[in-house]
Amino acid sequence: MACKPLQAQHHLSYAQSNRVYIDEANVRDQPSLNGEVIAVVKTATALRKNNNVRLVRDTIAGKPGVWYQIRLNKTAAYVWSGVLADGLITSKIAKTDTVLFAQSEPDMLEFKVFRNGNFLYSRSFKLPTLDELQYYYNFGVLWNSNGKEIWAMRYREKDFILFEWDGNSISRSQIKLSDESILTGQYADFADAIINASGVNLRAAPNDTATVLGTLPQYSGVEVVQEVPHYSGNDKREKYWHAIKYKDTTAYIFGDYLDMVQRCINNNRAQNQQFVATHRAVYASENDVIVDRLPFLWRGKEADLIDFGNQGFGDDYQFIAMCYSSFTCGAPGGDRFILWKDHKLKYFGDDYGVGDGGYSDGHFFTFPNEKDGIEGKIVLNVWSAEILDEDPNEVGNQADNLFTNNTYIMEFINDTLVEVPSKHSRLRDWVTKSYPGHQLMRYWFYDINDDGLEDAVFYASKNLYYSDVDASPFIGYCLGSASGAWGPIVINESIIQAGFPYFNCNFKFNTLYFDMKYNAGMYADKNEKPLRIVLEFRYDKAADELLWYAKQNFTSETTDHYSFRWVPEPKVYFKTNRILFENSWATE
Image (tube, rainbow, N blue to C red):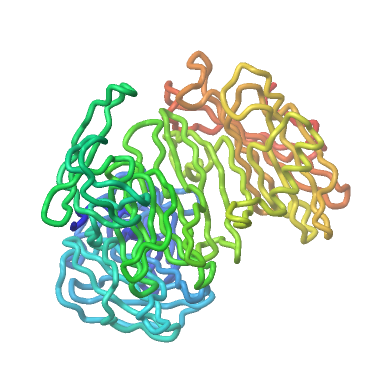
């Protein structure tokens, strides 16, 4: 059968970036050419867009576009969309190579390659005039690409153009993809269902006493004609038989012995291979012969099957994933990864997020070939948060409102993801051993005493979210050592108040900033006024002490506890009063 098109495209990268493409771009104080130029930024500079601010549409030199609001030195500024790249590709051949591209004209696509942040190469292509460039995708090296990396540019009407990169130059690619489903949404053909057991009888009628017409070998593909419900008086359950085509007639097979095909993709990285997802298993096929089956629950009709390649683990690894979306509160959305290695399918792990009302949590993987990836390992980030409506020029970004954020460095050992020792695990072990019953909510690594070694700052508590139980929260820090062991923990139990979930930390200009929000969020106490407090600390190297430097309170102009515009009060400094970190406080 021809599997129907669905939404495999949701794993494509959208053709829009925050990187400057032209040599120099003006940043203005207003969304107009009449605005004053307040800064000039160079090519490849990453700008911080304020995505929750309405775009201002305009036309410049006959080309329609928008003005983006960006954050520049804690103030709102504006940049014209025409100066930005349409996308950023990180090479899968070498992570040191990044590529910016832009559709400068309807029939012109330009590329700029940077190696280790330095400009390396550029090339322009005159192309057939197509509809708007909408998505792009890096396939990596394919079985028929002669060691070259393949990039796809996909346009609004699902037309696409392929390019290839050999580490030195870019050219149009003429190869034929084995599978185009991620670009077009059209999956490969396969049978309607697969027989999942051996010795299964095919009967003349939908019951277990009907005449046996024959049997088919295990893993045979069949064409399903009809699903037939059948009531069994023995176990009082409704069962299903399936009518299938068998020779020149119709035969019936009990539903437990059929895996109904949901998606099928051809392998772009190996010739004559397919991966087939059914409603309760995933199959691997080589040269039209099924070679392995992995029990696997398919999540709904809207899920996709995506080939992710080796994800930086090496040519003997290949990852495919069931990619599913969340359409209701409390339902997860993400990727369920399967590893294909040594001609065997193995469950690898789930990468997902789930939101329910104001609260959300996530469980995300970073693979070796991704930004901040580690060779041979998985970086697992587990977080929970509540998104508040705040001015991003005042608070930075939504990451400031995380409740918890922990990182685990993992390896796939004996078919299981296992945590391996790291600075993250050492810090967790040190804190939980020193303070039984507490767990790390959030933590950061900085060199706060300027000795060239990483130190740790953390927020610990006995509970993770809103609770009437005494959480006994505290803030702490410990200095690093050349051996990698953490030094003695210094804590403060007065900064964080009971029932307070939001704490963020930052370090710049030798100053440690603690940013706290009280009575904020969907589930906050509506009888209490929202309050934001920022404390500043600086390390005195001579005295080997962390000292309180300043404090600033903010109040909210709004009366609800979800949408805020924080109004600063005068900052109070402690330049002469030497108050140690452990003796400081947030509220009187």
